[in-house]
Image (cartoon, rainbow, N blue to C red; front, side):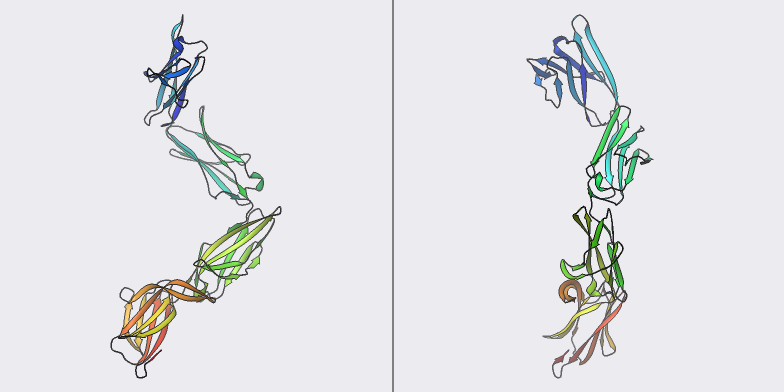
Length: 397
């Protein structure tokens, strides 16, 4: 392989003269090894060999040197020369083809540990140029019928199986063979008997309609069940709810899905396998799509009267209108309105929580008694709130 280390070994049945061996690469001297005072010496620099770079056998009949292939080399000729008393110089050489190969790499479509009873696919991929390779598996009987793909220089073999508890700890090996060259990657299967839960990651509901959350359990199930659903918002538990269990699914119905129902819903299930309890959980996010909801209104009257409304809206508001009686006094899109994002407090099933909301206000420079109305709209509808202003008796509502 390119840019990889390899070892060149040179062995003789007879002791070479001077306990010396010379190594050539493509006809040029690469280095030499000889034994002196029981030490393996590299070249003429009298440098002791490191075991990771070169070695000599104590009796002097075997020598080994490390060579790192270059990025542009395709064919390399290695040659070893020794001299013998009464025979003279003897040599042997070998040609090596340098493979441009990447891999093999193992990936799986499920995270480890794998869940017993839930299908898993393991892929072995390798990239190699100008040569054909064969990918084989050593993975018990799981690899009897692999699927093989080939595109340009990329080769892939995939095995699909349903893990069971008796496969835990089994070693699966993917081997790539080119003539006598073999390279491999392996993975140790980790299998758990935790239940597997299927639940939509995000649910949008309309505030005027009921919404059903569904949580399905699967796996190598013996005795199993569901715990309560947990509704949280910003890390705070809002409520716990019993789902309707039918077969291997738990259903949670949100009637007239409203702003109090936004947040994260956690489904939890258990599996009793040979007396051990395995738990699993999955969560979904519920977002309510409906008209804005006005959380709070108030009037301040320092130098001038200011009417303010705090509100919550998903999606974002698109228009704000202010009326005095039935007469429109402010009409603007969000680009021109006095609307700012802010944190607002809302009551979710008797729990006070902070949410990202909005605030809008109007300053009454020429104060006029009467009924003021703010109308806030988004893509799903409008909502309004009234303010009563009566300066005669300093009455503000």
